[in-house]
Image (cartoon, rainbow, N blue to C red; front, side):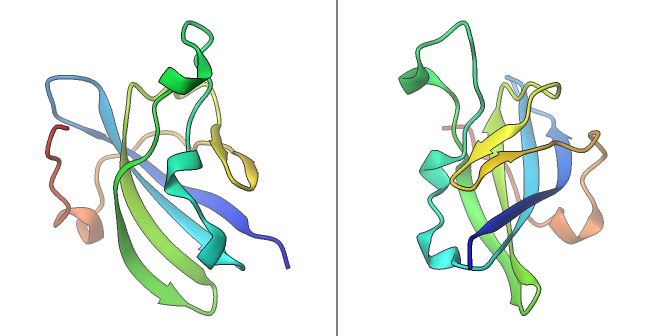
Length: 108
């Protein structure tokens, strides 16, 4: 069975530079999931300079999938995330939901 990645939420964070908290669910073959491969194309930069997921955190595990949250700098809301399973479209940004308020941003 192949891995499936769905973006559940995109939440802007107040910080010195643009950053979002992103919540995803990964189903099937999650042992193979590589957060270092979660990125977004940036035509102004070589691929090795593209942003990647930062400070990923396990939120929950269930039969429906494993939920994670991570931070992402300079997110382009018009472009999908690129994941080990291919593209994952971004929903419109919303405020950080209550179940993610315990996650605090620390600049790299």
